[in-house]
Amino acid sequence: IALAKARPGQLNYASAGQGSSLHMTAEIFKLATGTDLVHVAYKGSAPALTDLISGQVQIMFGTMPATLPQVKAGKLRALGVSGAKRTPAAPDVPTIAEAGVPGFEVLNWYGIVAPSKAPRAIVQKLNLSLVKTLKLPEMRGSLGTQGLEAAGGTPEKFGAFIKSEIANYAKVVKAAGIRAE
Image (tube, rainbow, N blue to C red; front, side):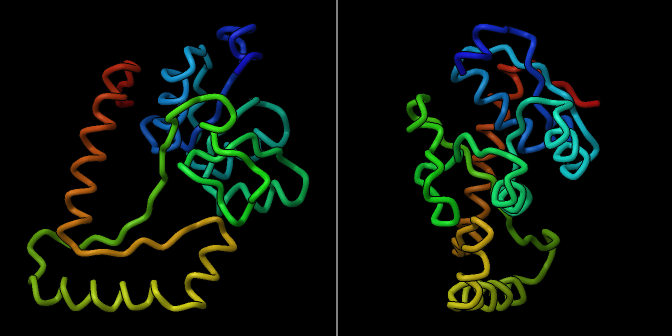
């Protein structure tokens, strides 16, 4: 943060693309810290990570499954995790809040959705199977080694979560002046 403030507009950050969740995370970081970082949008995480490792860009907010192997291999240094708590997969990496940005919490999440006209009985059956699977020790273990945490829940709860995320990100888009390309 100190380096970014000392060199406004001189540090680049990579994202998986304009408007991607990781682009939004970086913009939330910029707004929270008052830093001026230059966005470099890539066509996916893989080329962004390649350029980060090679030094073409200086910073990237990345997903744990994509970046953790590079950190463990010594190719990248993790500066912080964006969740509210440290991840068991990298317990020595502080949260961004711990590292000096109080209240910073942005989660990258994955979900399973169905067409809006899918029969409710089918959606409920799929949901029950998914929740059951997410509770399996081997599933939790596999996700945990990748730095992921299973949440599970009802379709209604997930729908409400998605709506709240859309509202939150709409505020970020407006505040950061992000435009579709």
